[in-house]
Image (cartoon, rainbow, N blue to C red; front, side, top):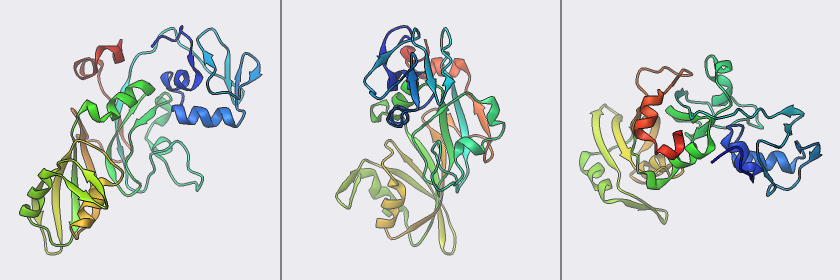
Length: 248
């Protein structure tokens, strides 16, 4: 995508890393977007770098070229993955250390409020969308703690996939790492990210997930990051793992 070619404004703003497409549509519906001195009310309007765009009276700065950037961050438990919350709860975007050093970024997928661990952030909407696609095929690895009786045999059955409440879940690979008196630690690897998938599956098995930490997303690992810390992934690693159309 070129910033010089006309694109629908929601797609254009997402490409610039200003917000997601959905967020852009909301801003437009609220009359907060101005294009060439006129309030925009139609999200289908196409714009390019030749247009003057204001959001909340602040100009959208368009660089001559946009370098693809990706960060890994540690989302703590109790924090939402959203730009703002009407209830005023903390979000990943206002709790990160040294957040002022980050440009405007978008999250790759989500972790629910009670989960923690690796979340990827990028400055390009199209990169986020590609990483989220099931066809990308990247495995996500989690460490979970469950309350209730579980055996390795029960976990092995998940490798065939499972249906819970009419929803079909693809194969899940799980290993019982440690069993305590009432809790067990399990490593779980899956290739899709349906809403609260792990929690729903283990609830179906009669266990309650009381801790969930995402350790990796494809080739990107949480590593030694602590809660609220983040680290940029080098360009050489991006070139190795992303298709050329996303980092050129």
